[in-house]
Each structure stands twice: as structure tokens, then as C-alpha cells.
Image (cartoon, rainbow, N blue to C red):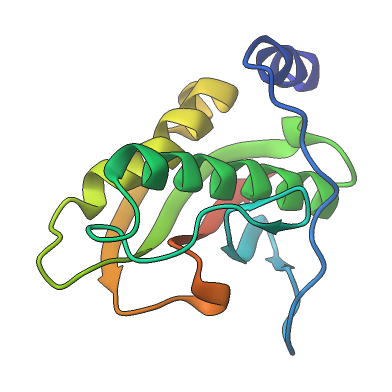
Amino acid sequence: MTEAIEGRLKELGIELPVAAAPAANYVPYTISGNMLYLSGQLPIEGGKVAVTGLVGSDVDVPAAQRAAELCAINILAQAKAALGGDLGKIRRVLKLNGFVASTPEFTEQHLVLNGASNLIVGVLGEPGKHARAAVGMASLPLNASVEIDAIIEIEA
């Protein structure tokens, strides 16, 4: 399974970054039994937040979807670090919680989160299919447009 996942990443032109260190007083993940809980990931690329501002005024839907993709890439990077480098230990992505910094009038948070959902399923296949929440927020840390956390079932 690990080779298949690595192959799909390569086909998609995705190189997972080194998992980011926490920016405050928290840990990037916790494991309890066969459950992996990942802290919220921002759209970090090249060491900085790549997409900032409010969706609906500063950021359009395609740019916000790209931000969600970057969050998903960082989720996979954190999962890889948590699992000793082996994404093949993922049994199922159970849930993504997506937060979109958006104007009060913006109501397409679900479309923004498709960027992350499509990437996760594209990389992991059937085990990547997940439940999800897409929530509008007034603001997010570091003025990020999107933040996503994850709950993943793993091999015990």
C-alpha cells in the first residue's frame, strides 16, 4: 500500500514537505489506540502561509481550493511523520474539519473544502473517503484563508 500511495503522490506531482513544528503550545498530533488526531494545518508552502485573507473578498474560490489542497498536503505530511514515514498504516480518513476565513455573505465553504477532499481521495483512494465539516470563520491564525484538521484510523 505504501508504494501505491507514494506512486500516486508522484503522479500528482506532490512532494510532501517536512511536517511543520507547532506554532504555539500544542502538539501536531496525538495517537490513542488506533486513532490519529491531527492538529489544524494551514496552507503552508515554502515555509509561509501561501493563501491569506477572507474568501469572498480577498480570495476567490479557486485560490481557496488551492489553500485547502495545501492543508491536505500538510495533513499527509503530519500523518507520515506520526506513522514513522509509512502512510500505508492509514486504514481510513474518518473526518476532515475545515475552517474557511470568509465574509459573512460567502456560503460556498463546501466548495472550498473540495480542494482537500479531492486531494486526499486522489492520494489514498477508498481509504481517503471521509466525513467532513466546512465552517465559515471570521478569521484564522496568521491570516490564513483555510485551516483543516483530521481524524484518521490507523493500524494499531
